[in-house]
Amino acid sequence: MRCLFLIVILIISNLAYSIYALQVSKRYTETLRQYKAELEKNLTLRTDINRIISYQKAKKEARDEGFKPVNWERVKLVR
Image (cartoon, rainbow, N blue to C red; front, side, top):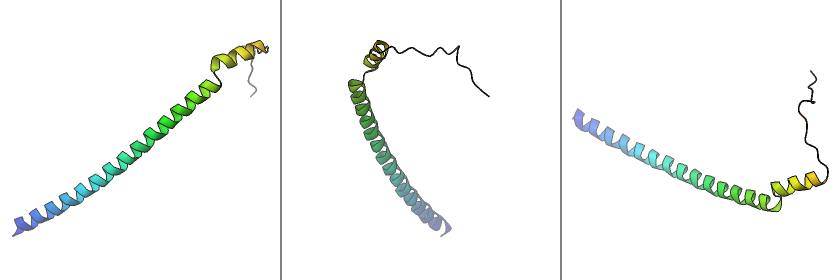
């Protein structure tokens, strides 16, 4: 009788854990799907920004306008 009771308890606990594991797996899959969607959106926005304002174009325009880079040896920090 004890063994039968123990077997029933083990089966019930196994079913409960299986249900919990499936729920966690479902949440993980949904989170991963959202992450991939956000990553794709981020990459799309980055390519749009790079297409609109390219680094090389901005650098050329800055040099044409007389931009001088910072000389870090002349920069002093005040404490």
